[in-house]
Image 1 (tube, rainbow, N blue to C red):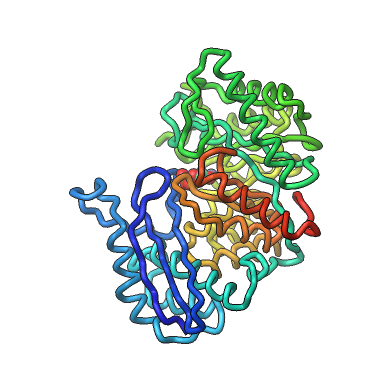
Image 2 (tube, rainbow, N blue to C red; image 1 turned 135 degrees about the vertical axis):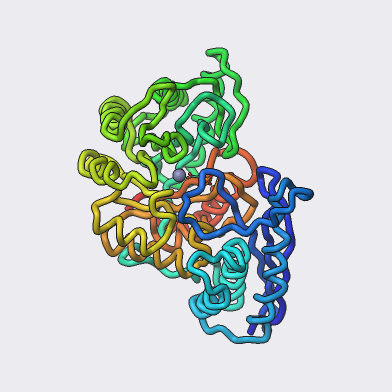
Length: 419
Ligand code: PGA
Ligand code: ZN
């Protein structure tokens, strides 16, 4: 049974308040969790409860969420026995009573769900990744780390509309060698940018934020950095992934505004196709906006056979929305973010829905992060094959990559890479 449950308002990597939860079981096991927070959020994400008090943290305080953990949630779960994480999550969802966790807050509920999962794993003497279930026919493996080395969009103050440019060492022999490649290319990229006179300040996820507007110019620079670091640009070496997060630059009239140009959905698709023809791109996330489902179907028909097309804002890690996407031929993969849906069990359910339809799952951090490494273990356990946790720099980003190397060192039998 759960014996104590407490919560604390702490800061995330963007200096915004978030929730830390600590929980103990009657066998003395103690575990905690820290909840992440996004900036380019999907409109159908579970609700992150904020205080709204302009006198504290510009309204972004998390004391209401903290109070919901120590108040109504503690009242409902302390002293009770839950035989599984699903049973606890079900109780929390019922207690909340809303379809999007808006009463207690997804930040409150997820914090408790993660801490309980960790505590149960520990009380069984298991590592978190050993305790979490595999998904479908996927088996545990070390995921390809997709390092976000160049930031734009709402994660940086530069003129770049596309949010994320990632390098993905698909051809690395191990997670340790993949991390090494990521770090060496990150350094080479810094030199290239500085050499070209660009400022090398960082965006929210630790990637550089140069004053470049055209995505193709970024791609040229990244390919040059991969090669300068001594790696092969391509699927057998280091490939590129992009998350334009295009919901953020879609105008009211439905056009996409890229580097000052207004493009229709079909023009965006053509632009992406040209990029895929020219650069070693293997994955495109949120290439079109969350409310552009027709465009998404056409994008999937056009490029779905060539690259992985990941739905983030369009799916929000929501099993029901992913099912709808599968029926409509939207994307061929889903991003997986615990706090978009707000519990561990529902996140696993979203992954099961994907696996059942042959959709890949791309494990993800948020732009506002903490040192919590839950997603590293979740990626390994579920065998989803790839993860993004930002740049190979900054504590909250490298914590996840370091955890993967730690798991690999202790379990050299685990395979590396996309299955
Ligand atoms: P967010 O961005 O965490 O700011 O929502 C990440 C993403 O769009 O993948
Ligand atoms: Zn995204």
